[in-house]
Image (tube, rainbow, N blue to C red; front, side, top):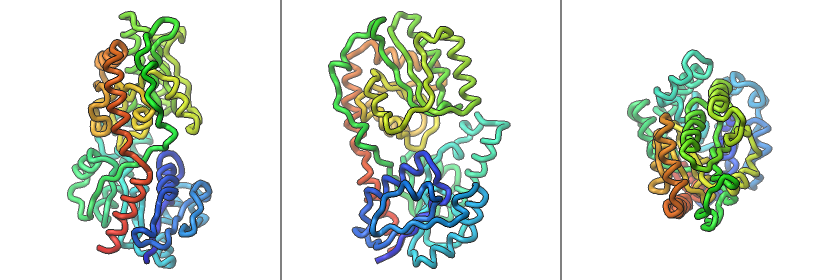
Length: 379
């Protein structure tokens, strides 16, 4: 039996923490030969992880501090600590690793550093410096790793094209999806008629950012309302301030009275499934993703979806959505109009998308992840 180490030194929140929590909650490491799993992380992250007999949680003081202290600890102390804990392999879900421990398995969870056209949206800002640093450190880590986990086939190809040849083995293992998002399709709601008193409620859940295109969406809905369609738009999520400024400008231009377009900011993730249940059509307008979890949530919620045609979205949604160019308001409007005016099309797309999303489970993710890591130990 072996010991697996997990470097969570720079996993502090968001999807990275969710992945780690769900992965460990669903894991059965003994089935693939691991009798012990050791996790190094900040105390806030460790407090959220499940308690398991086989799980050891270690909190070096540096991991409760800033980025530079955490990076320094990973570079100069993690490998030593992994040897002291008798680890046979080290898993680095954060993507970047600069130590000398081997073998290591790393993971690609962020596409922005590897897509130049998306990076250029942040020119002359601190963010582009951060993304360029990530591109360098993760490229070096991927090229030296014994194994790399990608979340989609799109990501595997895009990252490989950016880094050049990868010497380690690669695999595609998508994240899972929380069961609370699955909802029976309400055909009565799918087929209901939209009126001025009860308009079609469009829902876009996403951070407001430069690659999420909320302002083009506002203009698209304005175009359709001008054609007489009864629509209202609700946008939910935190915001990057330069992108929020563009969204506010669009709201002021197209809906100055605030009659039909609403940005509500962040909502509690634990209640997000309620927002989906109150919507009629889901929108996903991002142009850069690795694995779009929000898109999966929308699929599971039984909503017809108008979706960006960029990145891995067609790989995930397949024939279960109506696609558009996220930077073209007229194209977005056309996709929404197709769904809003055809109950038959809405029903067809809902049934297809909900069937597709059932392949995404945390049990499957944990089983395939631990099996892949165990293969590296045997190799």
